[in-house]
Length: 81
Image 1: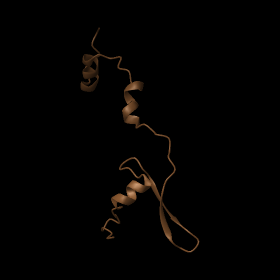
Image 2: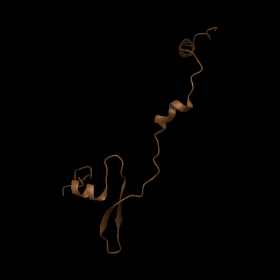
Image 3: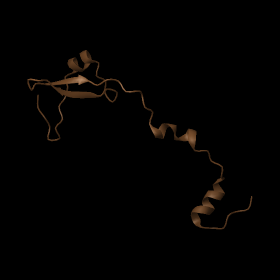
Image 4: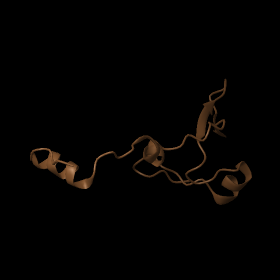
């Protein structure tokens, strides 16, 4: 198996399938035993943490109209409603 200049290797498909390694979903760890041999193990599953960007719309509620926001960004006086 060849290692790239960035230290990357490709895990063969049959190994990924037998270990249940899925792209972008699975974390792996490198473990060294007492004799110095290295092993790849599938990391324990962490709670599915949802990206803060996917939930941002739940926390930010817009209370200003577009004209008010534009006035603030331009430094204009606050428009009367």
